[in-house]
Length: 288
Image (cartoon, rainbow, N blue to C red; front, side, top):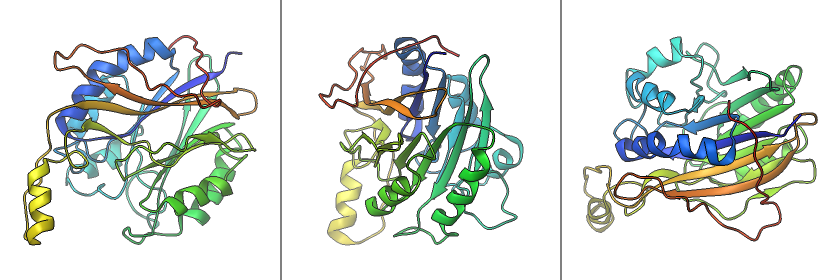
């Protein structure tokens, strides 16, 4: 059976990020022959949180599953998503009784099952249950059904992300870091076959400060006074990574970072991230 191709889309920020997903995902699906598309959507509603409306817009664009993080509760409408949408994940390590789910298993037509796990770090973040203990237990459960497991580790500290990925090496297919909105250049495949990227970046306006208008952020640093941080507008990129995974073993065969520009015209531009990293080998099979 052909390897499974999965695209993970970094944190979608506001309307520009949703527009990039809408216009670029269909072309990325065709170009990379993707089987599954994942995206972190916790900043998709006005740059803070997610709503059923913005989630539906992302799903309609061709995304199969949405993960989240520390901005989960920024929009009160999220409760409806947590209670009713099985394609939406919150961090697993919330206390028992929290609405929603932290993992899910997807059965692709004619393809192997793919499990997705969402966890949140604790260093410089709101304090949740221990993500290492939670991930160990959940991965063991998921492996009974799926050999391919993708983890979204939403965390601030690079050491926490790397440590979780190293702990899970050989047990999951990939650990992708989210939250900092700065794409790192450390993509690699560990000895056990687990791919790792410390941060996938963000999907949205990069003529900005992490997706927000520049001047208010500077004023905040200069004056320490409250400012309104509106979502910026220019130089929109879709960032993330494409993984090629062996369907039999669940080991990742290649990882390729993506930083795809959305031209001002709105027409997609075929300029994928290029790298001389030997872990980056392009290949492709039919879409879902």
